[in-house]
Length: 123
Image (cartoon, rainbow, N blue to C red):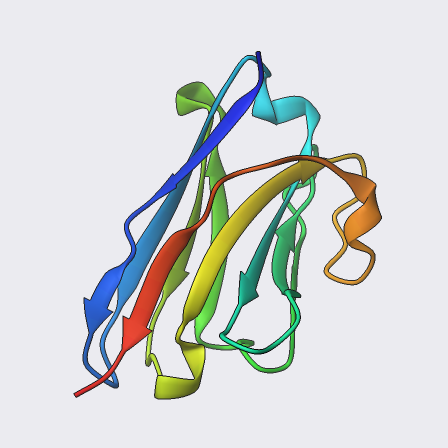
């Protein structure tokens, strides 16, 4: 059974940092592209970052470019999303997903999804 489990969310003040982790079981993440998505209340889920499986090339939405960094540690079967300079508009449930293509556009490329972790940016 494949499982992706996100962790590391929480409450942080504006300007602060968090690092989200996505740990996989049942699959080897080194064969998969990993995407990070988020869904704010009342909004659709959006792609914000992705990392490819072989070259570790990364892709970012304009809203997070320069502030968020996606990385992977295949030995730990884990992918990370390091979030700096957080803003209140970053408040959302954050999801990781594993699939064939490292895209932040078409969510249909992703086969496996985590349950999400809440990130709240507030003073």
